[in-house]
Length: 207
Image 1 (cartoon, one colour):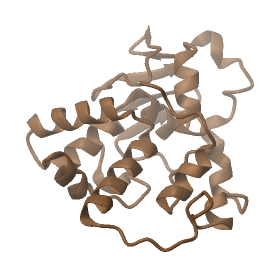
Image 2 (cartoon, rainbow, N blue to C red):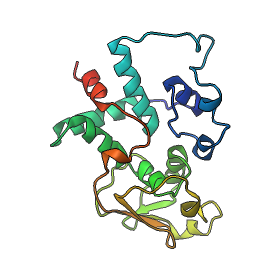
Image 3 (cartoon, rainbow, N blue to C red):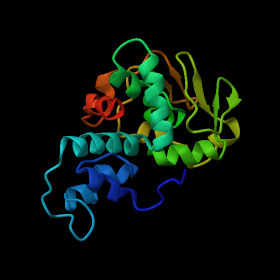
């Protein structure tokens, strides 16, 4: 399935809130959501009343775009979450949080999830000592994610942990000196940066 390759700031504007897709730019006054807080396109400023169907769709699209997940992958994650013990909506978010690209971003080893996907694709990371170049790889508690030794000397990675604006969540542990991190617990629902009503996504897929 083709991945969206247009301006990612348009996705944030379409959802009407920051999805932190652009890294450092999202925290400055240059963020398009701050400057033009309306949907993109010729009719973006027109007020539209959404139906229940539309509200559920927008919530699903928002979470998909937040994590950079395709529709096929997201539906697969929902089926996984539905079979797990606990609340399906929260399980879905936990599965998305455990993706390798999200973990790399959360550890501060990339400025955005998009950059994390690129770095993983280029083979810069290992999981438990083995190279993993699949951004959608689902990590587990106890996994150690580390920048490859050959990549640590690159200016790209120097100081990334220290300069990362987001706080590293409590379910992760960072060793900045060795440029590595460890998953020490399950992701917490309250650690997600944007407001999400996951029950709307469950309603969408339960039709």
